[in-house]
Length: 258
Image (cartoon, rainbow, N blue to C red; front, side):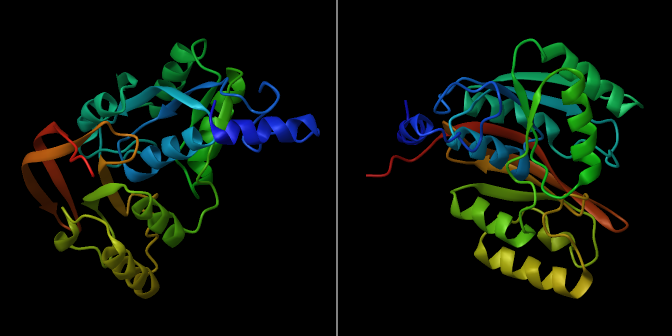
């Protein structure tokens, strides 16, 4: 039992509920619920897992859909197969499915498949009501709770929190005015975030990248047992968009800090 759980157990005696709990939580918000996360390998879906686990929930299952097109409305496209390494680094079960023309149908099929194994779904959405409403409807259909720990966060604050929490995030796709080829392969740090803020001010780009303006992959995080090392890559650029394609990667032991 974590210190956070103990804290809310004491508060529950006075009739106060755990802030992350819905009706099926045990008194005190004990670590009861098993969750599945819709997982693309990008910064938002990975950080959402980190945030819900911080509050005492368990994410036991990662759900990844391989989209057939880079213009997918629901799923990330570049480097999606790297999620297999990330799942291994997190020691989590990983369920994958290939998308067809009807992406919502595939998503429904995936959620139906695991609905008896978990109590809820984690979604790393922060501002897209389109995505949130679609998944929320499916969760209601199958009696699952929806957890959106990033919802409503300011895009700049979200990026800062991700970096400050120890996430190593690489830019793997760009498709917006102000985001050129030079951004592909860059690791997000305070310097990059400051540049993105200026690009957002000048061009109106949503720097969270939730609309496809920017795609990312997480190479390391506090919930990874090993980090991901890129061994080979190539850059593809077409018209006004580009991708940093990771061709070969492996898990590498993290340095031990003394």
